[in-house]
Amino acid sequence: MLQRATTILEKLLFFVAGAGLLASVGLAFAAVIMRYVFNFSLEWIEEGARYLALFAAFLVAGPVLRNGGHVALDLLTTGLSDTARQVHRLAVGVIALAVGAAIFAWGLRLVLDTLEYGLMTGSLQFPQWLPYSIVPLGMAILALFSLAEILAALDALRTGRTAPRGGIE
Image (tube, rainbow, N blue to C red; front, side):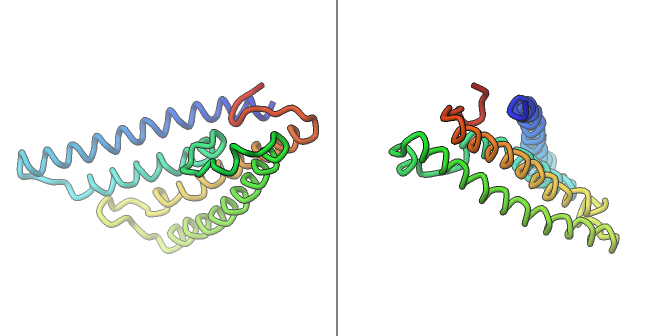
């Protein structure tokens, strides 16, 4: 059931991140056209594009981990037996959960500090906690997907079935 829920969440996250990335590229393109064609620029447009790109990247960190989509050398893992591959999957999940939890705690502190001090973004002049909130949100999603990977690896080790990464058998 957890695998099914994460699959649905994964599709939603990829869609939202894709829209955010598309909007980021659109803003950057608009900024170039405005600057070099019309000799006019808006101060906030570059910052908005940057925040949207970061939003997209952080939002899909968990689904990318689940699908093994991060840059990786699979030289070691391709030669492993099914059991050893699941142990490796378990280890990667545990490490990702630990790193995600640590960055979540740091990001939450960052959001709370910027909220407490009333800090504003450089050019957009809206509360800085809003764009910073993507850090704990993205890491919470990473932790959720890491937990799903840990449970899937443990289940595969317990039952002897090897479920594919990121999918339902």
